[in-house]
Figure 1 (cartoon, one colour):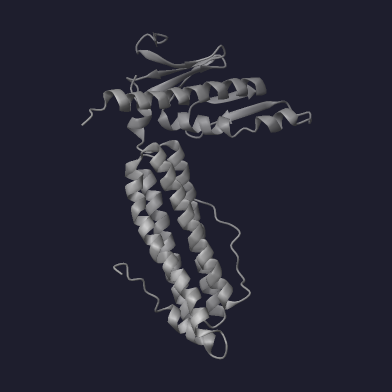
Figure 2 (figure 1 turned 30 degrees about the horizontal axis):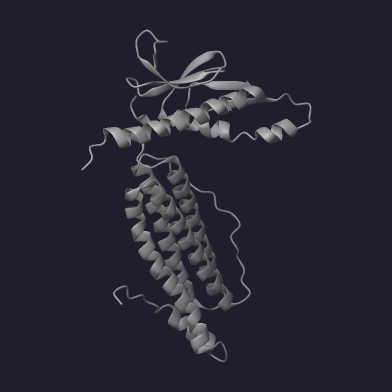
Length: 176
Length: 120
């Protein structure tokens, strides 16, 4: 009896489901960042707003990467429905705290898929995920660094203005 | 192991219960589901859709439901020629068949990997 399932698709149904969940997660992240960009812009933090616009764009690219991978492997990509995006924040700091939370949850989700791939010995998807693991290093670093600025500069006086100015300059040097 | 329900092609038993069976046809690269009085042909996509549709039915909820609605589910799969109108007992039976089928297909995959892959 031929292995028809394998002929049609390289990835297992479980991995396909997990990858589709990740598509949704990345789309959600992108929307959250867009909402953060709007909040920052409305409250006069223009540099941070630009920073979040860029982040939103990046998350969207991640989403598409997962989406296309599923299709290329013979799976079924599901266009996600995104609802329940928070539009208001209590403080400038809270925005960055939630941005870090968001990145941590994305890292955990990718680790979870990786663990499943290891169990199934799906080395191809593991290799695909390597790029994302590296990317998460940068994403978490940037989010953590932004929060650090609140500690280093302080929010008093023109502190927030200074923080906003420096957020746009955060860079991660992967070689270091 | 092989059954010849069809005069032209060879079918292989995938999984069988007293209520029905699933056969695989290597030539046509599809499966035949013998259930509820008919033999229906499913390709890869449709078989996965059928599984999803059946697995998504909340059997427990339907059992505990005390309203007067008949316990009948219509399983309609988009872009597939077949439609099932099943009672609750039939759904349980179909679910059992599909679960067994996918376990066997997974086993077949493992066997292919272990036996037919050239080891280095």
